[in-house]
Amino acid sequence: MINQVANDRFEKGRGAQYNPKNKFLKGEYVQEHAEGIDDWEQEERQTEYIVDNSKTLVNEVKSPDVGMMYSANPYQGCEHGCIYCYARNSHEYWGYSAGVDFESRIVVKKNAPALLRKFFENKNWVPAPISLSGNTDCYQPIERKMKITRHLLEICLDFRNPVGILTKNALVLRDLDILKELAKRNLVRVFTSITSLDEELRRKMEPRTASYKSRLNVVRTLTENGIPTGIMNAPIIPGLNDNHMHDVLKAASEAGAKWAGYTVVRLNGAIGGIFHDWLHKAFPDRAEKVWNLISDCHEGHVNDSRFGNRIVGDGKFAELIKTQFQLYCRKYGLNETHHEMNTSDFRRLKNGQMQLF
Image (cartoon, rainbow, N blue to C red; front, side):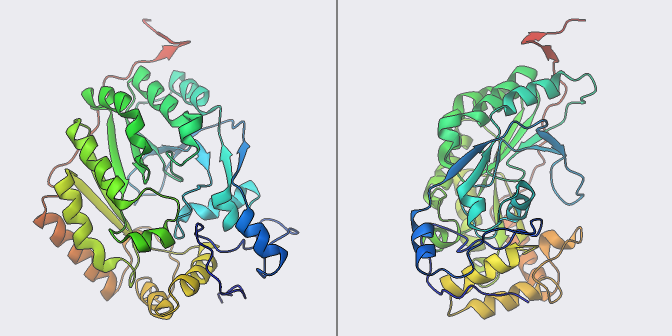
């Protein structure tokens, strides 16, 4: 059963409205009732950055319904604060809550570039595309200062290893110089996540992300510079943004996107309670309708971990979403070609020098 936090006030500038208990911790402090001192703490809470000296960076993705083989995430937690984000659950492994902690306590992997270089130097590595932002956004606000993602792209260019990017932040355009060099060798593809064109919805649902206008400008600018570009219209949340799909795909196509994808929202683990609480505070007039529509897409549940079904859902409403997506893609010329990135030019470097023998 989903428990809603007692306070009904909607906190602007945050996705999650409270910190649920971390299932891995036996004893901890959590905000159960936003009253008195709790109100002040949530309003004044500053983003905290925790430096982690990770031992590994690249993860093999074994899920058969995710379009990536390997991922690398320079940050854990995400200041963008998207309420639906599936990565919230992973923050519990770091000892934090999937709620407000996820968007205000950001783990920074400062040694990520060194780890990636070491990974590519390994003689057992068979070149394959590596996706940045497989979990959290590699271009969240702290990247402007840290430049970890930029260094990762430089290393991919040095080794000639293909890289994919998914982001909600216009900061990706800062690295246009590197992206252009990667694109010349067919070593990069950039997808921009665009869930709607409704700015009021974005401010509630994705409070610290770039505006939709800025994201469409990202698509346009990347296309003009010869960088293979698509969008993710994801997640589709029935009753909130499902009827925005047509306008999103039309605008993306006009901006130059060649490909598009979508997912139906699923609320696994702690995300269910966090989303339920947010939904009743942000949209009290339609909260139950939206909740029930999400359930209709997952056989009466809001969570679904079954491969295949978990991405696009099932049932009549999920089928309607799928049909509309395919129709609009055909109408606006999306997904007409398949893009295969180059793995044949990979070169193994050691201490910054190409190995000849």
